[in-house]
Amino acid sequence: MANSGGQSAADHPKSPVEVAPGPRSPRRRWLWLAVAVIALLASGAALHAPWRSPTQPETPLDGKLVVNVRPPGQRIESVPVEAPGALPVRAGGIMSLEVRLNQPAYAYLVWLDCEGQVLPLYPWNPESLEHKDIHQPPPTRQAAKLVYSPLLGGGWTFGKRGGVETVLLLARRSPLESKTQLGSLLTPLPLPAMRLRDEVVVLGLNAGANSVSTLLARSRGDEQDALAADEPLHKLLLQLGAHFELIRAVRFAHEGE
Image (cartoon, rainbow, N blue to C red):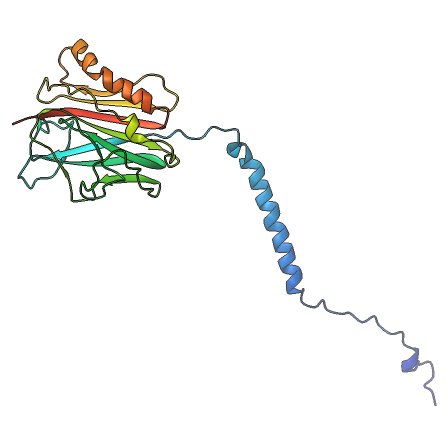
C-alpha cells in the first residue's frame, strides 16, 4: 500500500550527474607549450630583426702585431720593442711575435731581416726556421684571434749585421688563394741603415684605405729622411693591400757587431 500524500522513489526526478573533469592529455599540454614558445620567439625576432639586417655592414677586421725582444744570453722577460730600453736589439738577441685580432682570421707573419732575407715565419714555421723559402705555399691553419710565433717559450734569433729589422703581419678572413704567389709579392727591400739606437715605427693599412698610416713613430731623426727610408716599404704594403684586409709593419733598430 502506498503512503498517503507521499511519492514513490520512482516519482522523484533524477538529479543530473556531475562528471569531474579528467586530467588533461599530456600531448595537449605539450602542444600548448610549443605554441607559447613559438609565439615568444616570434615576438623576440620581430624586436631584434632590424639589428640582424643582412644589409648591415660586417665588422671590419682589425688587430695589432706585438714584437717582444730580449737581450742575448739573458734569462729575462721579453718586452715590447716600444718599451724604454728595449732597443736596439743585438746579435744573438731573441724576438717573439704576438698577433691579436678582433675576430678569427688567417694570419701570415714575414720577417724582412737586416741581411736582406725574406723569411716566412707563421704559419710556415711553428717553432724553428726549417722553411726559409717564401715562395713555398703556406700551410692552412685554423682561423684564430690570437697567434704566437714561435710557440710560447721560443724565439727568433737576430743575426750579426745591424740596420733596421722589419716584421709584417698580413691578415684576412679567408685563407690565401692557392693561385696567389706570396713570394712574388714580397720582393726584398733596400736595406736602410739604423739612424738612432731606439728607432721604432709601426705602420698600418686596413681594407679600403689608399694610403699607409703611421700608428707609432719614435726616434726617427729627420722627418724627410725617415719618409724616404720608408717609401719602399709603403709601396710594398700598398701592393699587398690588394690581397689582405689588415696589414701591420713593425720596423726597429738593430745595432750590429
